[in-house]
Image 1 (cartoon, rainbow, N blue to C red):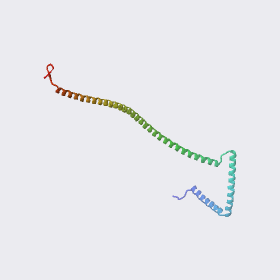
Image 2 (image 1 turned 180 degrees about the vertical axis):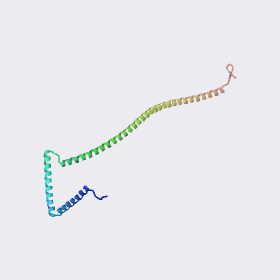
Image 3 (image 1 turned 90 degrees about the horizontal axis):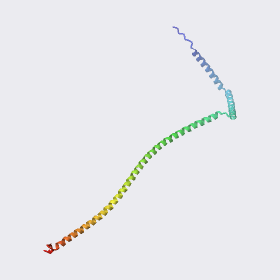
Image 4 (image 1 turned 90 degrees about the vertical axis):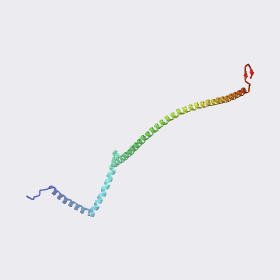
Length: 188
């Protein structure tokens, strides 16, 4: 068997890229370690930032004249949209809570109506009972007055009976005191 290695293109590419990376890193290190390069890059950066600010201001001015939205306008609209969605969500939750409370209140009202119906029914029954009771009370007063009259009549009858008994006793006593008549009207 032979110990020959096959050609791997990826292995070669890896070696070249590592060498190239090392060389670029060394070059960047040499550039950034140089004071003159750092000063020059600082000046370039400052000029570039001023140029970007001027460009941005000009772009906003042109967009304002042409009535086109800028990046800040879009950011503000996006922020307002998010705030609006949050407020709508909050309002939806409040509406759901109100619906739930209305449902519970309607159930409470229905139960109060049912109780009220029962109370009205009981009140009607009590009213009919009161009418019956008043009628019975009037009847009992009539009976009481009739009983009073009967009692008075009974007292009169009792007094009459006593008077009759007294008269009977007087007649008996008178009859015993009188001589007994025999025959044609002569006493014996």
